[in-house]
Image 1: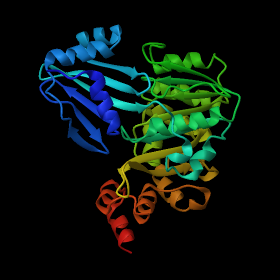
Image 2 (image 1 turned 120 degrees about the vertical axis):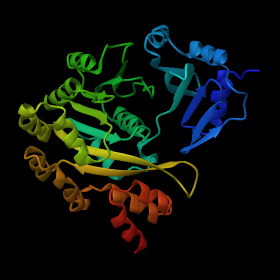
Image 3 (image 1 turned 30 degrees about the vertical axis):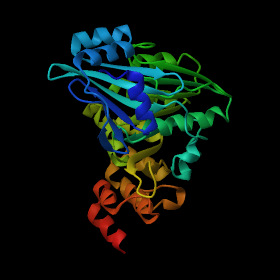
Image 4 (image 1 turned 45 degrees about the vertical axis):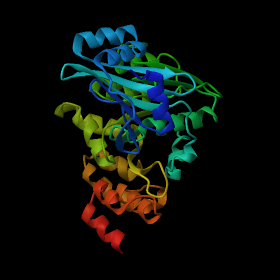
Length: 353
């Protein structure tokens, strides 16, 4: 007896699962608010797993899997959800990991983000980075920011994604969404050509290499608002990661360019809520004041945490301050707060006060 793919995904949707895992030899498994749970369904056979992949994957992804035993693509069930899918081989059998992407972009005000994030949607130009680990809510925050601008401005928005996650509908703005491999060969190529497509706002799914990073900064420098992501956990690490992408003999020039273009770094960490079901983000925010620009220009990124602490009135906040606020509001557990803190010992003293 086999279970249909649609039944698995509808069951996961009803449980509000963030991820679904289909591995031959195991029953379907879903992740619900960080916990992995086996579904009450039959074990997936190699044949049924292959059939599910053929049901979901476009032809090029099937070819890629045959060649390298890994393939990334997107899948959608109309009226239910979109999924970011990775198919891979493990122990010689097929495994499929699916990340749920809610079909409707949540309003920015519903994401429990600090008020300063809404202010970033008024920026006319520059580079805004949303960072964090995989699954920290970066894509959702960026989609909500884009949707907010879509309801306010009459501008041209281009997104470059891998894969397209939220399907964004043009409202006041004209929105074009381009997907890696289907609409462009690389982020760098898509970004290079986007600059000739009369954009006002560009979303780059990830600044994953030097060429993409350089083009994103150039776009920001030439008057566009550029939103992108990095897999970094705080603002100082983000600045250092960008600088370290470049050869040593170019780093002074890049520090100056980054200092001129960077507007903000928003770093997110998701926590399981203890007051109700769901997740809630702790958020570090760095705003690029003249003092921060000097710090970046002079290679003193290690001073960024102190600058954040002393500029709370402007809307800046450290990760640990955000975690403490969630704890004192009864949203997260003490052990979870300390496990994710940048300075656990210092935070433990603050939580005990």
